[in-house]
Structure formats: structure tokens, C-alpha cells
Length: 104
Image (cartoon, rainbow, N blue to C red; front, side, top):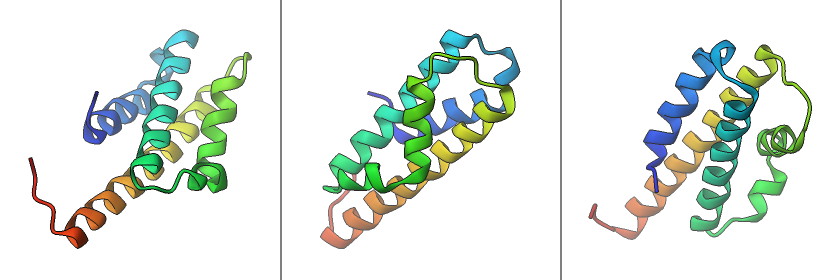
């Protein structure tokens, strides 16, 4: 499993070079974002946040859309996903700090 930092780096690269991605690569990166967000909220014990998050819903809709996404739409979706994943990462770190857990 990739770390959230790895996923953020992957999404950032994809957003910067979205014009070079094939439709299959776009769907793959959207799927990676979706799974990372889903797993993050589950780890935090807040799976309902995924449904409540408008940004996440954009990612879900984009992953289920069998039509072409324009580059600017894809870039915006990836940027939203990055923000959500960063929020999840910050919440995980805060939770870890609150419980006094140490790094493995």
C-alpha cells in the first residue's frame, strides 16, 4: 500500500501533466484518489465523511463517468482530491499525537 505522501505526489504529478494522460490513466489516478480517501476516512472512524464531502463526491462521479474529462476538469478534480487527502493526513497525525502513539 502506498503512503499518503506517495499518493499525493502521484496525484500532483498527474495534475501537472494531465494533458499527457490517456483516458485509462485518468481513470486509474481517480480510482487511486478515491480509494485513498475512502481508506483514510475509515481509518479515522469517520466513513460518513466521505459521503458528506463535496470534493469526494466529485472524485466518485468522475470515476463513474464513462465520458471524456477535459483537462481542466481533471486537474480540478485531482486538486480537490489532494486537498481532501491532506486533510485526512492532518487528522490522522492529530489523532496519533492525541493518543501518544509513536512512529513505527
